[in-house]
Image 1 (cartoon, helix red, strand yellow):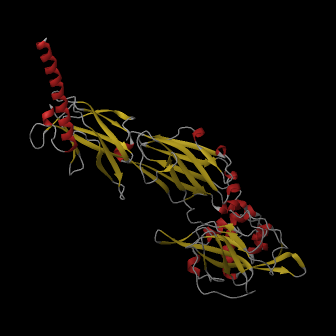
Image 2 (spheres, helix red, strand yellow):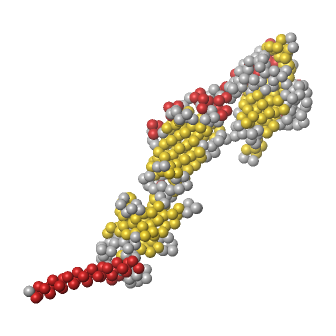
Image 3 (tube, rainbow, N blue to C red):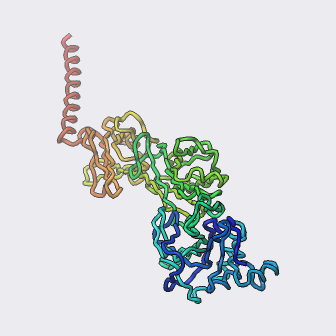
Length: 520
């Protein structure tokens, strides 16, 4: 039996196969010339190769019917995949009726049966590589997201393989079954694409949507401190950063009735991420809040790092956002855990229809500096002094930053978790035995270098001349026991002489008072 009513099963342009490897040899030319198959959403690096397994010819007396004739070299594979062989589940009557033309039996299938046929054909055709199947047309390369036109050798029903290189190995991925236009016509037939396999927008013969996609376009990430972009720059512990993830939804999601879609956001240790879904917002291209469509699941903490997933709860909701860029926003605070690493890192990926994208990242650095406290005792280096107390302030010297820091047994005091910028350091308490009148106060500047390291310099404010940079990047701060140990040069020398002058003036007043007391 060759004449069949033209069912949606035969003309629903593509049903997906998986993992079939078929050898390619010389092309054979037969039937109508100029016939093509269009691959929508083709992918760069992929080659689409056509193999005809059945000829299709419209009945000139009844255009609602098509003559389906199985290509001889495909007969056994189609028979097995359709369940017409001895072990198949087709009825005895159908096995007999379609024994010499199994493709005509497949033409009676609905979309669900056709999907099963496709899967079975994959299994039964594993040995086709050795059967020297000929290519019925021209192998064609794809371009990401754009249509590719495959020249084929006449109208018919084709298996189109999708081959590409992955991890240095030749791979055959998910392939398609597609009917060409018949007698050059498409509009005469009511084509209903199978949305379950990503063909929902197919409404004409001779085309299919490539399912075997390259990785989706990765998301991009932004991070700001206030209105300032700080990606690749710096922030301090305690700062609250505003993060944005720009999430492109693949355009071909529109071809599916269900399209699984997940955003995964990974934060390093040192970021206190939101713990409830209400602290996140997801908007569409029209800036409409669609957070409710996602299941948001955070795991981890600031001490160890946090991973948050945003999954479309019902995959049927994804296709309406095909081709749009969704925007995820949230705030996170830099914590003490960021100090050791010297930065907080954040990355995001997209998993679209089970294919994972590349990574969008942000990185925000933090820096620090240290000083060594020494006594001015006449020796070259001085003696390290424990017990000196310092307070760090902003550049103005008015807003304190963190708690007071005391020098340890080696005279060391250190600060970390700081953004690049200028800070004021004030000694608030001298070690026992040292003057409390001459407590150093000075400014340091942390400058971020091109390689993201930082350089610390003494900016200004060292009135007493007690602060000096060291070649190893450290800072030495001296304490004195009395005014005579202050330096005698520069501004510090002026200060010392001013102090001495004041002392002398005070002594003069005292002497004058005493002198007058004697006279009287």
